[in-house]
Image (tube, rainbow, N blue to C red; front, side, top):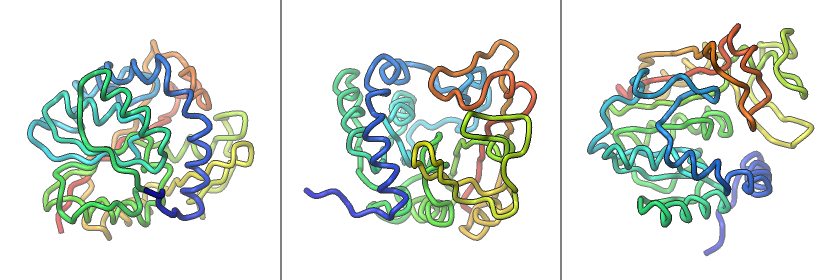
Length: 256
């Protein structure tokens, strides 16, 4: 079966994630499959405390931009019925290897979050932890999440904060603004070729409302006092994250 034809930004990101997939096939990917769910790259914000997802037992869930599917695996261990969706075959291959190793089975679908080949109203929960939430166009993936969700279903996603995005240079997050907020949307990183999407909060709320969602919570996550800079996601230091929120956790519900 041939791979789907993707929009330009998806194809670029798939090529990059294919090259870097080796970063996720070793102990870090395996560890992520066994860890408790934490909503921050710095740690210290576990789901058991934030309760962003609540009780997921018996829920049909879709993980948009699942990568190696560690979040889907966590959902399965909690009694949900997850489906992992990702456009990168290499990432899904790693997920399948880990499924076999840990004996946890759930469907994996090769697709971009902007166009998911699954039926309308198939899920109670849609999630994204640094997947679709930053790599997919919010003008397309959020309406697609709404299509996939049943009425009263939840959308929960984690992304970089607007502030860290405004302050990020090629060397990492600084204490000075590096770009204007006006017009902030698609960002192309010249050092890697990656394409990310970062709408300011006000504009993102408008997209959610236009897609039929009601925003329930917006949590700005700071690094804890004991946090250390992440070994891979080192574009923002723990010290920066203690002063300003580097991450945003969004919780919305489909109302119409």
